[in-house]
Length: 461
Image 1 (spheres, helix red, strand yellow):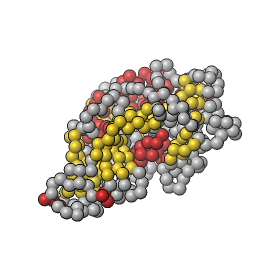
Image 2: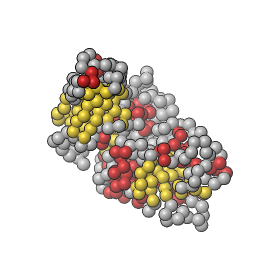
Image 3: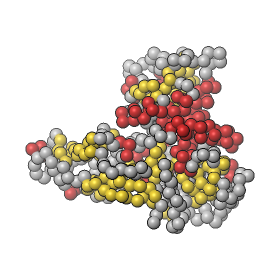
Image 4: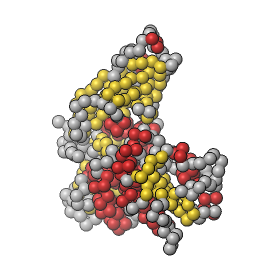
């Protein structure tokens, strides 16, 4: 994996100002460079992890973005420009939590001032991008694995053939959870709706892959056959409620996400009839500096296991909005890292305006295409839509972020592509001529102009 050199241009950030938008690239807020208001040590940010919490912050969610305007980014890796935490200028560091990206400006900027209590030396052998591919997500997963170990009934360890479930397994946190549990010797079952992720999940250590429909049992039952010795739940909502029904007596569920919703509709039966424990994990606030310092070497040890399997998108600042939308829509796969000093460098594009088919009553338009040729290591592919209509685009069965008129639209699709691909556009527009007896049509002007862009994130020229 290559990393770009820092850009020599002006300092910049992704800034969320509210008003229902998702933010935009902007100049660095006043006070970061100067250190006004007794801020923490100045850091040149080389990479920042992209977490679900950051997507919520981009959307101005009041539970995360507690002050506006705000630079999101709850973790970062970079180089100290001022001494801090017993480390000299020039030391490579990581910083997580402690209000970053929530109550104070975070890592989606070329410069940041994390509190000194958040700063730790970066483990040797981990680059900034690699550290942030793990980041808060990895810390959360290790805390969850440790909690599952502590809650196991004393003197009654789970049998060797016990199954351990990970929900939301195709997300970045879920993939790390699969790898961490497998590294600990557990038989891991990965739960995801994304069939395209199954091969990767097995490579990370999952013995089997199931869909959410396979874990809930019959509707209306408060308990089903106990199957899971423990679980790491990355999604919350109805899926977490279904998981609780199937945990064996004395088992534990570590809840670390809410992508499926914050509500939990369940009964007390798993807790008082089976002694099930539900634990919440908050990596941003709970670990002390000493605990974080002990966790990072363990994360570094996990990296070789996931390095060649974890889908990782390296983003420039101007791609933050599209990835945030993808995370909130549930269509992102794997992990993403922002390099604030980098820029998107398009290599070439492939026009997808022609050769469309019309299905049914003409409200679905379908375009089939092969895998783009000439992809090089470090390249990514995104689907971009100029002058988009109000519609929903689906690629290989995965719904992407909704298209809206008047809004720029692009979506990373690197990990969704196959040898043969099908792009579907669902909208209200019908063809002006031809219909079902004209198998290949040019997409009408009101439906915009789609294209595949072959891109590389690199430094500006």
